[in-house]
Length: 71
Image (cartoon, rainbow, N blue to C red):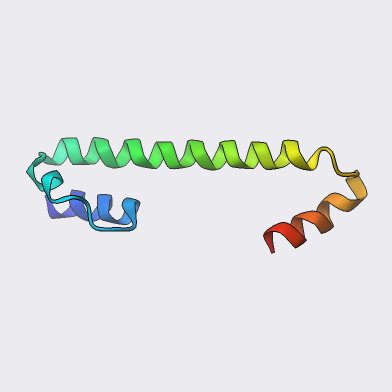
């Protein structure tokens, strides 16, 4: 069970609430997978929104604007 809780801890980037320890290994693994999928979905949505926002900037300037905004 420690492995599943460790995976969840890495996904949360924090200690999980104490009640999570009462869940069995399969439930913790499902929760971890759901969090990972949600984070991936959020990242894809943010990238799509960024690309849509940059569509208003002339093509020649987009690379420069991306560097200014995102480093």
